Image 1 (spheres, rainbow, N blue to C red):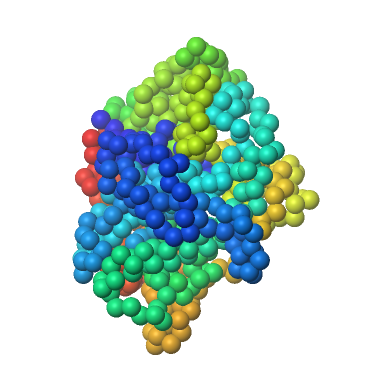
Image 2: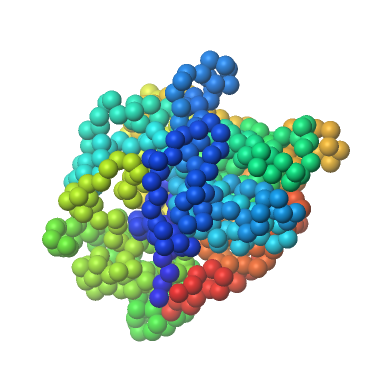
Length: 568
C-alpha cells in the first residue's frame, strides 16, 4: 500500500500547500493534545504530549524591533513547539544537543513536521551523536498565536472555498487579523529561533548542571535543518546572527535575492525538466503505466496527450456531481496533480499516472474520487456541517494567509505599485519558465498584489556570512560552514540557487543528489547524503564542494518501496 505521504503534505512547495490531509502521528496512536491547557511562558516549560513528545508555548515579543530598542509593548506572541527527545539522556556523553527544523512554506507547521517526520529526521542525523529534534510553528502559523487567519471560523473558510468568491468578511476586532500580519516577516521568525536557542540552552543547563563545562563566554549556537523556504529562513539567520550558528544544513535552496527582489521569478527554471522525468518513467514502464498507449512512440507523445487535455479543459471546463454537489474541473485541477506529484516522485508517480489516465478517458468522477487522488483536497463541505472551535485549529486552519503574510512582507516593492499590472508582469516571467506549472505559482503573486501591511521588522540583505574563524578570535563567525543540499533537478528550487547561496557563505559546500523532486532528503533515502549530514552535525566538517551522491532509490511504475524512506 502507499504510505501516507506526510513528507509531501508537510513540505509546502514554496507557499503552495499540498492538498492532501495531514497524516496522524507516525509513532503514536495518541493524536490529540489540548494546547489550550499550556500557559505561554517566556521560559521553555515542556509538557508531556503525544505519547513520547514534549510540547511548549514560548512567549516572545510581538515586535522584536521595538523590543531590541528597549521600547517594546506588552503584546506577545506564543510560539508552539514540539520536541522529539533524543534516544539518550541529555547528560549522556553522546548527546549532541537540539536541532531545530523547518519544513518550508512559508506557512509550514514545524510541530506537525516533527510529529510525523521527527523520527525519520532523527535517523538521518544520529550516528555517533544523538539529538533532540525540535519543530516550531512560526508566528502566525498553525498552533502559534495570534493566528494569521482571515476567517472568523471554519464555517466561513469552508463556505469561501466552495464559492471561490475571495476572502470572506473578517471580524475587524479579531486579535490575529488586526495584530499579527505586520510582524510575520522572516526576520522576526529568525529572531524567534534565536530566542528558542537561548531558552533551550537555559533549560539544559538548569536540568543537567554537570552535563558540560559552563563556559560563560560561549553563547549557545543554533543547530538547524531547514527545507525549501526553510533554507531562506536559515540563510536569514546566518546573515543576521553569524556568530550564533553552530551547524546549519539547508535543503531545497531558495535564492534569497530572487525571493526578495523578483518574488521567486526564477524558482521554476527546472520545473519542466522534472516533469519530463515523469513522462520518461511512464514510457519506460510500458504497460505498467496506464497513461502509456501502444501508439506512443516516446515520452514526448505521452506528454503531448496531457498538454492537449490541459488545453481542452482551458477551453471547455468539465462539471461533475461529486458527493452531492457540482464540482468544476479545469486545467488548474490537473495542473495541481502534476505539481503535487513532483514533491515525492517515488511515491506519487504511479497514482498520478492512474489519475491522468482516468482524466484522458473523460472519467473525471473517478479522477476526483480515487482514494489516493491528489485532486481531492480537504473536503470543505464537511466543515459547513459541523464547524469546529477556532483553537486548536483544524486542518483547514493550516491556511495560506500565514504564507502570504510572510512572503508579502519579505518581498520588496513600493506599495503603490503592488497592483494587478505588477502581478501580471511577474506572472508572465514565471510562465515563460514553466508553462505547465506556473499557473499555481502566479496565484501567490496575485495574493500580494493588494497587500497593504507594512512589515515592522524585515531583513532584505545583504545575505551571507564569512567562514569559521580558525583562530577562534572572531566570535562573530559560524562554528562550521553551511552544508547545502539539492537534487539535480528540483521543480521549486533549482540547483542554481544552491550555488548562489554557497557563494554567499564562506567555506560552505554543496551536495548534489542525482535525483528529481523537491529537497534531497525528502525524495529518497541516500546513504551517501545521510553519512555526510550526520558527520557534519557531529564534527562540523563539510565534504568537498559539489560532492555528488546517488539516491538509494529512484521513481518507478509500478511503485517499489524504498527501504529507510517509505514503508508499507
